[in-house]
Length: 296
Image 1: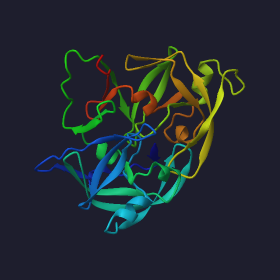
Image 2: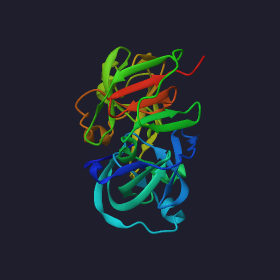
Image 3: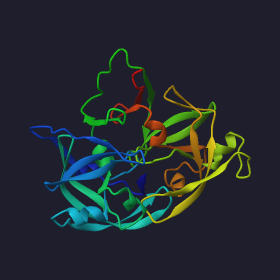
Image 4: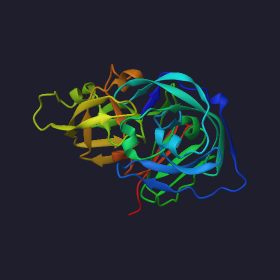
């Protein structure tokens, strides 16, 4: 997850269809994150994480090492990741091609070396690209699409639907239920794990001293900061009517909850450990989240 304090203006970005739409594979990273291929300035392909909680596209040091042209620098902005904030430069991307579409005039965050480099990808696709269509991510089938409209689903498909809202950085938000308690959640395909804050944990009767909690590995984002967390197994998690039994939840009061305005209430970052169980469709224009259960 990467969330900017100031969302970049999408009016500066245009997208157009190419004459032919090449097949763009979906790779599932060992961390469970969805990764696709893009070309930049006509070069590539390069591997980018699909991240619905990133306000803008991000380029990493590995892209600069591989790209035969130099990207023009534009300035600096403050970026807030899951575990902290950092001042980073921005660069201009004249053309980025993926899913048979061409995006022009992008301003990307130019991240310095940090924990995200361990993913061995070249960058992150953010809302400046993803919010211009209907995002359709299916880890089980290793495919994804950025569609012009909501796809037709087979009558036999078990699908679950709910309304979403978009925050200032175009990150989708939805109400979920943990053990029947309502929680405000950010839908984050760029997060490996699902994380709740301690306000949400308190609804479940949990405190940092509760028995049964175990220490989780440190949460790291695009910045160099890391946050400690606890791990809890809930009875159930309901998302759009889809029921997930005994989900593993991380608990931490991450700085990003403050950035997205959720620090004062029970809140969740809904990550790919739970979303990846379903084909996940986000209609940015129609403001709807659809989860399609795997066949069988």
